[in-house]
Length: 430
Image 1 (cartoon, rainbow, N blue to C red):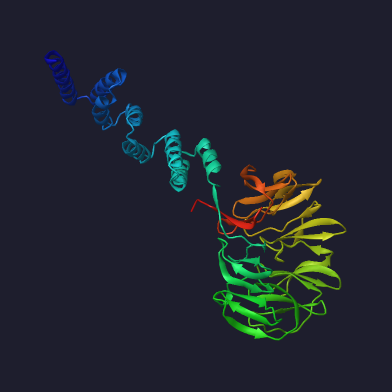
Image 2 (image 1 turned 120 degrees about the vertical axis):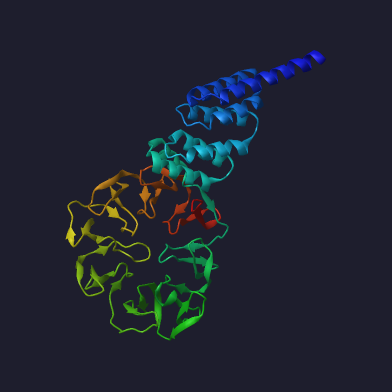
């Protein structure tokens, strides 16, 4: 027993002497190398705890061997279950502008293992910014589209406009916000989209047939006994209203109208609107300028009636769809199309498959999907087989097909149809 104690004390004394000799070396490279050698001896013996002080001191030097020292120190900390110390080394490494891409990836994987996706994505974005590494960018794309599924369920929904969305429950309509939470209760026979004018409001048809405008607190701010068959959508303080004779008029949010009747009219978007006259459709700006002449069988509108974005609009004639951009018809036609949004490429159909183009008519993602919606917030809903998912601008699935139906994103949320009804998914990333 005494001999073992003497031997142990001798080893400790030898280590202290070696350590002291190293610290007194004038050459930092030699000093660091000696500390690493001492640490490696302890690691080989399996006495990891004894290696820590050598590696900690070795990591204080700034030489070509410092990154290797940090890697060995992380390994030792993990062997001993010292995760806090392991993370501290990772933070030290990623604080260096010259940190290699694989360290950012390692740090991100650690955060993901701890269910800290936001921290992982923040780390990956920092690494991409500093290294422009393709593998980091791919890893980020794989992780960035994780989402939560909200608990609110609706019988039907439309699409987002101005940060709100029409939702239906128990056969009545209301307005929800970007996350699917009710703003205006589902208590109306019909309701328009909300509008940012007048601090936010919507035009609604009550169950008793009375036409009203309500604000976001569901207080009535205008009322009319006008006989209306259908309420269109409110945007830029203009709402379309279908009369009982089938014609349409426009009104403002105070329900004032000039009583001019139209055969058909869409929803104002980007100061332009689709209008039907003498059986033909065209597009006009709010100042009266003709964007598309009244020569077409149909103007391609989204489900809310919007048709115009990025100075581009689709029009159908004799079964073919044409693209107008900056007032001119571009070469080529399509079988079908969905209008551009404010946020991305448009979905177009040819040879029974859907792909995506920019406003110059250039193919960005080839025709390959059974159905598709235009891009919103860097993702697009696409149908593959019987299910819907979402792709990124790289043409890869951001969210694998798993929904019965899907719609566009707004404020990083989108309505999807599940077996329970319409629910909202929200990206976890801020």
